Length: 598
Ligand SMILES: Cc1cc2nc3c(=O)[nH]c(=O)nc-3n(C[C@H](O)[C@H](O)[C@H](O)COP(=O)(O)O)c2cc1C
Ligand code: SF4
Image 1 (spheres, rainbow, N blue to C red):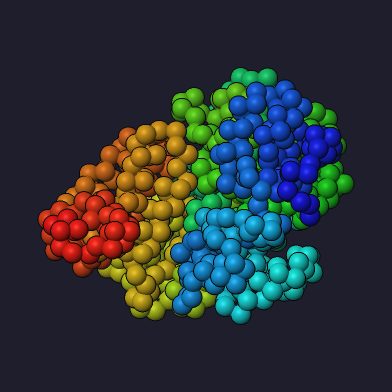
Image 2: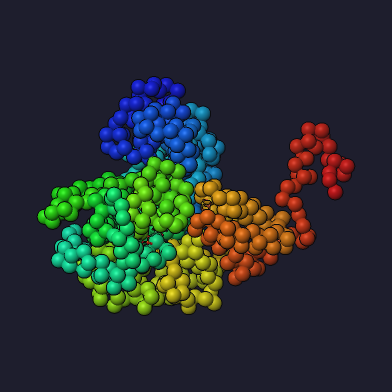
């Protein structure tokens, strides 16, 4: 690990760029290498990168500013990011682990210690919600945090013990598979799906995917067969396959398990798609929080190349050429939105595009592109092998097959539960050992908050669609604190491109903070309803369109949560003018009635 950039020469910067460039010319990859080496990305480094890649300096600068895991000023040699998710966050449990760690290491959250040793900050959900409170240290996840582990971490940092020498068991991440159905129960040997696919040929394979009724598992539920068909029919110099492994919705971690233990099925699904649409290049866009999975995923790809399942003339089929590159994100939830993801793949800020045109005709580099979720590709591989009838035999009429849920929160057995579509919320709660449940958040903060009288509702596109997040909140939880947390998440993750979302998510967050602090009034509640409806209707992409869901849902289904916190006046200003005069009163040693505003 090196010292801050002050001592760094242009030659050293260029050496890092050249080395990174020899592995990949992707902008995010090169910036990551610089961040790792120099602990930040300086203006000089930005200039050198721009010159090396032939990009405008402003583009590189804006990318550095956009992504949470790139920094313009030096971070500590130990860069610690604690999750602030309601399921794997530092405030889960009785103690505020963030404050404890900051105090022990004598560092202010968000700042780097003067000696450059350590920086501590919070970050959005890191996908460890089945493992209790969690953090990233130099990108590596440590889970099951408690006060004693935090104390030991502080000691290891102070003694400058390399992270590689920290207790290995701290870095163990379990799959925690509790219930399995189609995808997690059935074996999948690399290449079997592709051999079945070649036997059926292109039309037969596409027909099988379409007849299976498979719909996208990323949340929106578009027909996978139709998406592949539109892309195949679209004109373009090249076609591309993109696997969306940006899994950033708080409470979701099922793609982590698929990538960890079923990567062959995921890559095989991508290859089946490439065969159908005529693509030669695929990308797996891996969220930055899952970078620790990269070596293992690269090994699976290398093995598939050895087996002739990637590369040229795949499985001896002349003209069937396809390979997959993994591109790692850098901490931006919005990059899960497919057009923002494509922008990011192209080395830009992850700002959602205008749609139409859709990626199937104008995607990566303006060419026809299929973007599918990790689970969708895994399901496609199984369908290629076992056929549409096998898949359709499970689930409901409009929701064929199974869904993998990430269950977290107040239950005895958080983890991965795969069910046939149509399972009720109550069934999931019974299976995961949840008792005395106050509410369930289905589909993450952008999804739906369900109260107990509706626990008979069923998961599926007919009733409750979900990307997979299933958060359980027991009676002991402060529901308002959870809604405040979600509002902060959206305000933080808004990409800032459109005003209704950029301003609206911040106003909603401020309104909730005011209510939580006991200063909100009925007027504020009415304003939030109005603002929520506006943000929902007027925002450019799905983030803004769903950001008000937790507030609107809870105002409707849990009104008491707000009402019991309201101040007993008709109106209280956001800005406490009398409070702002406190400093002046102290300086002038006055606290008499005339020094206060009435
Ligand atoms: C803010 C936002 C975040 C999203 N995050 C993800 C994600 O992490 N993974 C994902 O597959 N889809 C995500 N989506 C949905 C994608 O835009 C897209 O619909 C999906 O990748 C298509 O794949 P599918 O058809 O297999 O579901 C997100 C959408 C929005 C608006
Ligand atoms: S809705 Fe929000 S996240 Fe989406 S484009 Fe607008 S500002 Fe960006």
